[in-house]
Image (cartoon, one colour):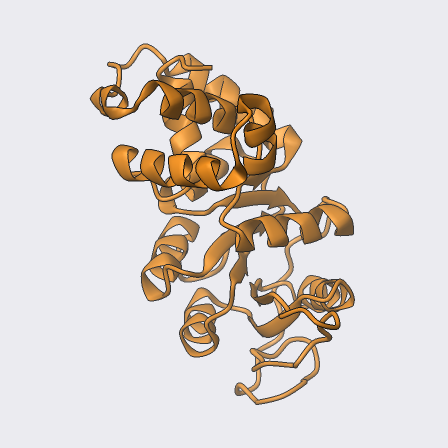
Length: 247
């Protein structure tokens, strides 16, 4: 796992491909033939990690629309380039990670936030989820896992590093003593079934197979669940399910 290092001072932002270490504009990464490439921005103050991640993503057919070394520069990239996913290291100077995630969500709600961090502290995961991140991966994840996470985030789905997920669920189960959430009473029986499966980490296709309904119907149920629970994403809905002993 890479150690956090202080990057050299970043030169002014420039358009087109640029050496690692700059806050860069779109590089026009390769897209798969006949498909619209997913776009992402990388916000991380570790220059070498940012450069390697960019190379890995572009080799996977994910276009990197820009990279930044600060949260402020990352926000500007998201507003200017409208990426599908913002990949964020929340431990950045001058802006707390939870604040950065919230501001990213406010700047462009259609952009999903994937936290990619060296921190394996459970409270960082909790803070990220409550702020609106939909995926949380550790930097020791494989290239394939990171690619899957970016694609899941672009679809609005959830992915959490297994090591963190178990600690997260244990923490939520310890918190079950708090009063039951009254919003659960608004869910239909079928929506409760879907929520229970969402909380176990199943995607829409797996839920459809288990309940013998179409993925389109599952998607509608999930949308209704998020609306009724006032949840921004599937992780927040799963948190509600675990805290209220649905799983």
